[in-house]
Amino acid sequence: MKKHSLSKEILQCALVLAIIAGISGLLLGFVNQVTFVSEEEKVSRSLGKFFEGTFTEVYETEFSTVYKGVNGDETFYVAKADGQGGYSGSVPMYVKFDGSLIEEVHAGTNQETIKTPFKDDFISQFIGKDINEINGFVVGGADGKVTIDKVAGATKTSNAISDGVTKCVDAMKKMTEASK
Amino acid sequence: MNNQKLKDVALSGLITNNPVFRLVLGTCPTLAVTIAVMNGIGMGLSTTVVLVCSNVLISLCRNIIPDKVRMPAYIMIIATFVTLVEMVMRKYVPDLYDSLGIFIPLIVVNCIILARAESFASQNKVLPSAVDGLAMGLGFTLSLVLISAVREFFGAGMLFGIEILPEWFPKIAILVSPAGGFLVFGILMAVVNFVMAKIDLKKSLKEAV
Image (cartoon, rainbow over all chains, first blue to last red; front, side, top):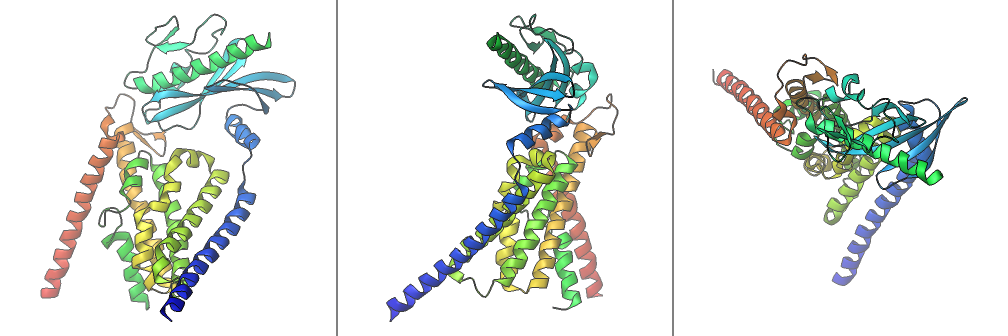
């Protein structure tokens, strides 16, 4: 008798949990269908904030990705990389290239609290540089890289931005070499 | 439950039993996401939605769920709502979703939600449970906004991501670090508890007279 009531109780518990799990699964499956964000949509969302056009991934390195953008008659390349060493983690950086020249530099969503390094004064140090003539950027200068003047009081953020742009430049150079 | 009791439940969640400053629950997201006011609002409202929905459902199912499996059942219900909120945020507010990062899925283990499910929703009817969830959620949101406003303003000279203080104005950089989070949290908690103690004292003096 006791054994019978125990197995009934176990069955009841299992049934209730199974019903909750089943309903949860169905609900989550439905909402996932409605709110699903494809990789293409993710890319066009993140790049679309800064650049107009449609994008396709054309090259990938360990640290960065290069996309080919088409906007009407214009064809251009944009590289994306996470700059490491920021005050609050990584800083996603987007660099647009006009041939071998750096045309635009933008920072994606980040947790850096001091925003001064994202302003034009600091960012303009990267613009117009020819990637064939440089070996990346570094705050303070080292390793044969282009010297970047840091923003006082925001050394880590300045480092992260330089790191991200350097990775973008590196990816673009590798892609250019690979396509030769 | 009459209107006065519902009002008491609402006031309890918002002020007298504020989850952050009075019950010291949900401290992990409180310290982690409060470097910007927008993060505080996002985290607070996400938690409020989960609290209201899970409280309502747990209250509805309180007579069906066997006592021995109530915890796994509550966790499954809470996890479902958290995942729903996460999916909706990923689709419609991707920037906020990126900013809050891992702390969105971690709402599942936020002790405010499980505490309200266990101590309130599982013992009360649907309406008071919904009011309790809403009040607790809004109390949590208010606390996060207060902490993040102090940290963002004095630590970075900004509010809602807009620069308020001029660049030359000295900022207290430690406030945006984890240590600064503890500092602001402690100071605000002391202020809130001091004010509450004064109010309680006045009330008890009035009652004595």
